[in-house]
Length: 204
Image 1 (spheres, rainbow, N blue to C red):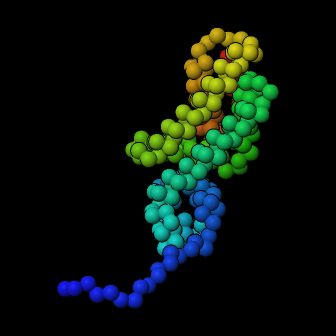
Image 2 (image 1 turned 120 degrees about the vertical axis):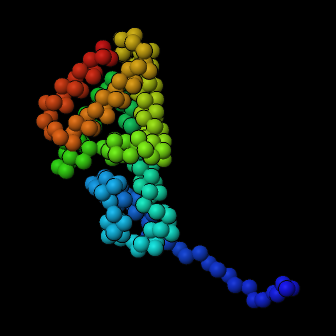
Image 3 (image 1 turned 45 degrees about the vertical axis):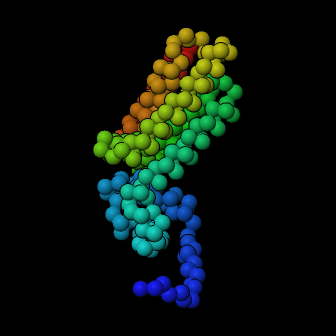
């Protein structure tokens, strides 16, 4: 059958009538509060303020939206850590400030949600490679930020210990994760202050 030419039609893509970044911020809150498995599609439709079709068109499915939310959370957290370390007068001051900021945020959360990233690790990382990859990147970036700060502190003489900088960075990174898990059941400030004091002592 010969090809028949006809009138050309210009099909314009539909423009989004919502801010994708704002939707991701809302999605983080929903998943953070309910967890991945505890969040239904209806929860997302109601909480995001967009239609089910718009959500599918933009994010494909619930899992993709979750991973994108986790990536956005990771990016914001990594930027906060890097900016804090860069703006601090020294390595020890930066690490102390980050520990205190973490505790303040955790204690100030009446819902005791813990950390979105850590919650995702506990709930999904063991059987979800996409989530595991995001978490691994976050852990590596956090560790690297601490490592660079500790090396700089050791070179300047601010940090006296000659312990391996990489091991110290991993210890501090894991300490923060422990704080985030503990905060889901504990709110006593003295508990966290003791951990911060002991953690900082390894840098003397």
